[in-house]
Image (cartoon, rainbow over all chains, first blue to last red; front, side, top):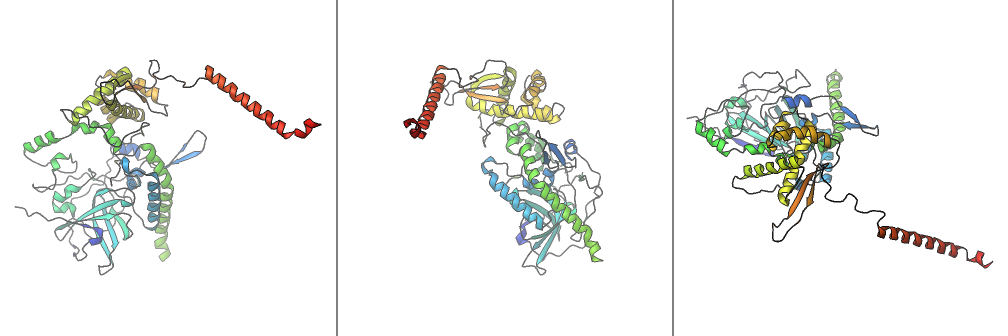
Length: 305
Length: 185
């Protein structure tokens, strides 16, 4: 019988700093770098800033369409009872203010990241954790993401709040996407799929305009699992090889009509016109910050000479 | 806190959308709710004006607006929009009507595409009363008169004349007050 690895999840403030760093890397199988674009993404990743003219002839500045994938936390919580334009505007101002101090890079579920947090209890006063982003959520200043890694054969997940002032540095070591938006199934997968060495270095992107999609299919451990993965239509897992009764029961329990429920979709999302307004408001500042950082990075090694 | 779903781009609806949907309990459960709303939306697109109970009319209005706004935004070559049209319209010739008649009609609209008018509430009867749900630009005579106020109605003519007389009288009294010295001489 396989021993079930006990999962330990921490919030960033309580991360235990006495884990020994794994020298030997149990890196996963080779990652293919070719980008696979779905039909929707291909039409939306146009790349250039658009300037649309309105009737009066004044140019209306519009952010490029991929902004909503790069900065999803700028969109407010779609729950109608909680919408408040003033609160959202003030939050966006605070988010931009924080982003001017610290670089919060573009990342997606499936990217491997390293986060450095100020920690008064650790010997170096900083705690650094490397892991794969398995989920991201929240909106506004409460935006968070979860990093997962396996350290000394113990699975560890840490939830980081992106705009927390304790965070010193967020680096993206490998920028890529996976076939699913949520990689929670890695908890029930074989440990090699979640293991990343702490000494991993940032990888250079081959193609800057497209984010590659890693088509890896993960192998899960035998049941019992934390969730009923056979009911979730996961693209990124290998064939689950369960008895037919599981799939039959999944069909009985499924809600196929939800796919067609137009108002349910509407209430879960922000309309396109509002998205355009929000991103038009923030994109010029974000681009300025990006540009300043690029210039600093280019000047950095030359100024050391 | 939830993050907004990014997988689909939806147009903003120009009707008041309530935060929670109505449940419409039926023996089939949520599937039955959508089946009945499907029949309502199909009838609306077919007949362009239907009379039904108010709660279902309000729900169906949302779904009809979403369907039309998706058709306008994405056109008929978009796979997902075609799947939605295929599901929501039971009669397949109405899919042609949606893309070939309704989309060109509503393309330049800045307002909602449907109109919900409260209908008669007969006693004894359903507590919420009836409603008439119609697509704008339909060929039938209007339910409500286009102009609420008409300049040449008798009472409007009399009121306008009375207002003019008052203004004239006031102007005259002002001039009388300003030149009492002139009239003495």
